[in-house]
Amino acid sequence: MISKDFNPFEMAQAQFDKVAEMLSLDEGTREILRNALREYQFSIPVHMDDGTVKVFRGFRVQHNDARGPSKGGIRFHPQETVDTVRALAMWMTWKCAVVGIPLGGGKGGVVCDPHNLSMREQEQICRGWVRQMTKNVGPLNDVPAPDVMTSAQHMLWMLDEYEAINGAKYPGFITGKPVGMGGSLGRTEATGYGVIFTVREALKELRIKPSETTASVQGFGNVAQYAIKLYNQMGGKVIAVSCWDQTDQISYTFKKESGIDLDELLKITDRFGGIDRAKAKELNYEILDGDAWIEQDVDILIPAALENQVRGDNASKISSKVKIIAEGANGPTTPEADKIIQEKGIFMIPDFLANAGGVTCSYFEQVQSNMNYFWEKDEVLSKLDVKMTSAFLAVSDLARKKKLYMRDAAYIISISRVAQACKDRGWV
Image (cartoon, rainbow, N blue to C red; front, side, top):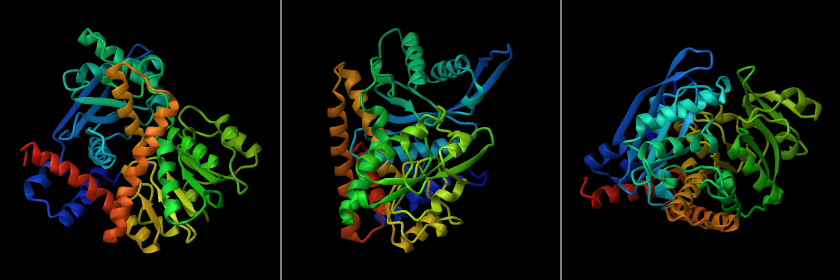
């Protein structure tokens, strides 16, 4: 649950301001980078199944496209706000820059809860979003993708609407499409696998074998599931996962000291990543408070849910055993929590580096769609591994040489690249 007092955009700007000061950026560059170049807010009227008309609020923020077309997901969430979208768009700019792909940052959203909508109603929202944005998105200027509570099916509806309006085939307009309809093999695994590629490199740096580690994960959606899968394959053991319970409107942590069984949990999980509590109990899982994931005596913490989850009020509960935090979610850690994590000497892999596997593979999908030639899965994941490892090593090397916190080092690389692109274009 996200606190109503929390403003993610203010947090994103504070993170930027800190690094802008470190880089001594001029006033014009600061001004263009701390705010979005363009923002769109609009209404989407939908004829509901019961015959009524309901109006949903939609957003698209294009933060910066100096390095290439805007890129970023569209999320469906009942607590969506324009400030959330602004923050996510800004983080997307840094994310694309840190992994060195020629794209800028964008983000979209609709204030809705797919749990309470039929598939037909969701389709109408998707098509309505595209109708409102069709003149301002496209393969050469802004490429959307799935995000929280949106899927390959949503992307295909959006693509179909875009192509119907524009009268031609534009498979590169949107990514996260179904495989066989212009989607890329490996895209589903990409974000979760990318998180673990960076964890693997961090463990190498700390000279720790993956098989000797344990982890606790917040979230049990796509990112968390694939992160757990690859981490298990490397020999690591996840002892706890936390997820949101739609019925109770509260989160719970599911713990098994001997290690969770991913396959058995997936069998009792709904499409939104919610685990059936009664069935989990039958499988001998300990059911704990939703925040318990952060207090576990593990080596690795992976927040892979929403923003504002590791805060000043709970970061002090992180066990002294924790050596690495890998942010699978966007903006899960507040600046107050960062200070505590630094004091504890924990190796932080920041969100826009750790979870950049998703946008990297989206870029691969866009490239494949535009040239109408598709790679095998092993090739996609191999290219992803190279990109993620190279980005991690660049950030880690800078952090070590300059004695910087990993988040600051990642920001310095990203912001420097985007600032230089703005300067080269003559914007500042």
